[in-house]
Length: 475
Image 1 (tube, rainbow, N blue to C red):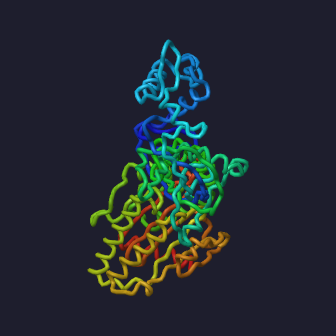
Image 2: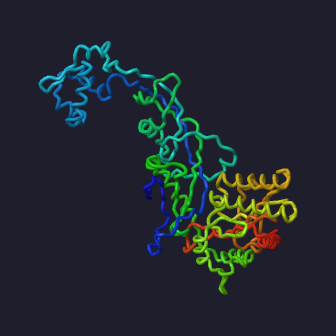
Image 3: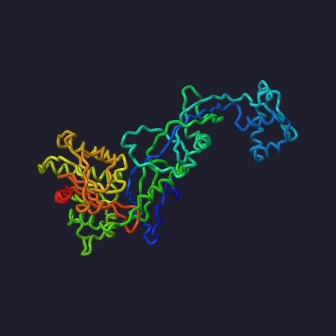
């Protein structure tokens, strides 16, 4: 694991190929979200108002109350002070006439003794306030984590595994220490209290486990040159700088999770790429060889040719998931151009959105239902339809289990047999008469690695119509 100079957390999933050019662009190949297990703790603690002296000075006064006339060298050794630090503390107690220093020894003055009332061993300098608060902490790094309301979709996202059960079992003890460390970050504000800059945490008296909850961690996967072998995780959309430093345990858990998403190249990947060439033979003609589609060469070209759609450029290469911010924007543009074309050519109204879903972690992000909703809203508004009149159908390989993430967001979910769909790595979003996005999820330049989504996006009517020939075979 490493941290970039910009404070961005990067987790390497594989060694980079040193022979690759160092000036290759960083490509965002995936974006998804995962649940971080958390828990609220009821914490009883005391906050003291900063008074006339510092906390260190308070403890010096308590020491002098127990051992009056103490040698300055012994005081320095007791606190681990150097000469400068000792001089600073002694100056503070002498300025306030709480103590006096003579001949290398320090005594409490009469005023200093009056700070200890009724024989108590704590000087009455600070105003101490008792508090009880519910504070959220994640259960991996035991760092502060705010509670956020979640809906049914959010709670269906995959969950990070707690790597060490023993650490989770000792959460109460660790939370007490973490509360001390992160008190400034937690930054409570209570009505009528002294501002936090004038207060410090005096003590933590009790920690009681309370309600469990989850927090969503956004995960961006980037790769130099878009290659599987250089896939890395960027957590900067979630945390940055020192906050990630404190959450190394979470970063490690994300790394393990990403490792579990690796897959081997499939013998059926060539069939999937062949479907791309059937959809856009003119656009992909230069990459069609007698022995099949030139995957690596097209991948290299796609990285170099990444650009936006235009009226004179209706088909573009697509690298990365449709749910990455940049590709999601390209999808929006493709729909805009597709709707404009449909309006001028009297294309029949759209009745259904078809989405052939690949295997793996597809749709594990709030961007999935948001994308579906945005597509339906734009089409319904343009064609004066009720949103409920526009249906969505998800197509899945027969052996794939249907998750709540898919079932809750599509009107219909249908299975496809292996003979009709030999590859489970093909993704096709088809909106008849408007657009088509066809993507193959497969390792690039690696036999076993994280899949890199690679394909095309088009609002070219010829390409969109060819997609109609693909779906009847599936339907």
